Image 1: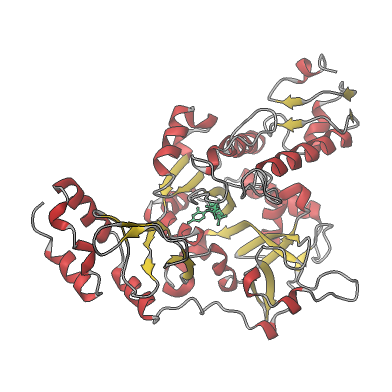
Image 2: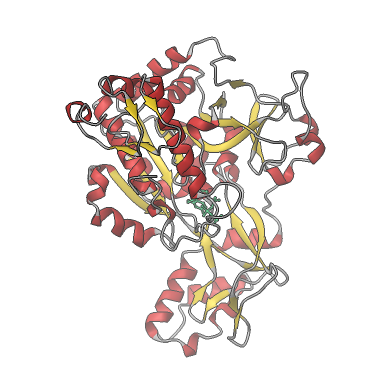
Amino acid sequence: MKTIPEVILNELTTYGQSHLLKFWDEINPAQQKDLVAEIAAIDWSIIGELISGKSSDTSNLVDVAAMQPPVAVRSDGEGVSWTIQDAIEAGEKALSAGEVAAVMVAGGQGTRLGFKHPKGMYPIGPISGRSLFQVFADRLRAINRRYEVEVPLYLMTSEATHAETLRYFSDHEYLGLSPSSVRIFKQGTMPAIDATTGRCLLSSKSSLALSPDGHGGTLAALENSGSLNDARLRGIKHLAYIQVDNPLAQLCDPALLGHHLLAKSEMTTQVVKKRYPLERVGNVVRVGDRVHIVEYSDLPESIAQQTGSDGELRFWAGNIAVHILDLHFLDRCLGQVTALPFHRALKAVEHLDAEGAQVKPDEPNAIKFERFIFDLLPRAENALVVEAKPELAFAPVKNATGSEVDTPELAKQAICKLHRQWLRGAGVKVDETTKIEINPRFALDPSEVATRTHDLMHIAEDRYFDCESPEKLSNLH
Ligand code: UTP
């Protein structure tokens, strides 16, 4: 390629971004082709609006004065007219009818964790060393077996994680899932913009400084990859959404699905009680009859500290990014351009300066744009909030070993603690110091543990319950 395609040139000129071609004559034809492809993939009218401030992320901003605690199904089942058992039955019916698909987002760059592969490959199994991807694949296999279905998995990656994730799945025989029911697709990217000039940054002479467009990119990526259509063809009605970095996420949990169904909700979100007022999680709140999530950074401290007459935090509900979304709701949102606004974040972004020298800024220099999936909540009719106990549902893997919170070590401890409890609930004596890990294909929940451990009396050593038969187990105590 010698000449610059005219359409590219015109577009960049219109939006004041022609500097992106400054090094055109210094790069080879293959690099020129790559650069053109990157530029062509960007919706410049959106970038133009974001830079000019015409399109802002204020459309979903919450009026703090109007904020109320959310109406929620509490973890003991309080708050609705039906019982947890009713919900489980409704959820199980939808699962058995093949109406549920799983969506897992795994496109993040995992910067804080500092793991050099996609986060989904992180070995989180406390004893087995199974990866996060494997943990969820095992859960889906157990669900498939129990409900005699094949729940499709829509797995979102990004430019940063796609190739390695694909290779990982194909090298490991799709982790035991049927390849025809797994779709792995990339989310979109957004260019980083110089915070002072509004110009897009180059990361090299032939590429832009791009980053994933946030987990809110899921909607467009599901549609553009044909996954929503696949779901429609399969007769799917509900999408169970999780993030890959929470090994306790109860993917396709029948109770959560059932609450969603019984409330006729279009989008349901699972929350946990915040541990302390300023915890760095999104706050799930109500404004009128709408559910919103307010970022911890946007919640005034005085409001975060408020308590009710029972001494509990007034704004108690923390987002754990586990949602149920109806397909018809997503179809409706696809037609609404403003459904998912872009949020701005000021970040330090490596780039080339005007002379082509690499710059590694210490201070934030650029604006990155991201969408958040939870911005769909206020759009949903009958949006529902369901509380889970954190020890059953939330152990995020965010930070590197040695940090105070959300580390792999803490997540592993949480897994062991939960599985020790499951065994104790089944009447097995378990020493407190033992590590216990239960593969969902051995038992998906405490009641299944009870049916599979009749002959087990006492566990005094670390034990991984793989997928062994109960006969084999009886020899283990
Ligand atoms: P986080 O916002 O915690 O980001 O993503 P991260 O990439 O895991 O970690 P940091 O912030 O770089 O340290 C929460 C979840 O959303 C997914 C991530 O893969 C993770 O499962 N995600 C995030 C995406 O799929 N795409 C994105 O653009 C952002």
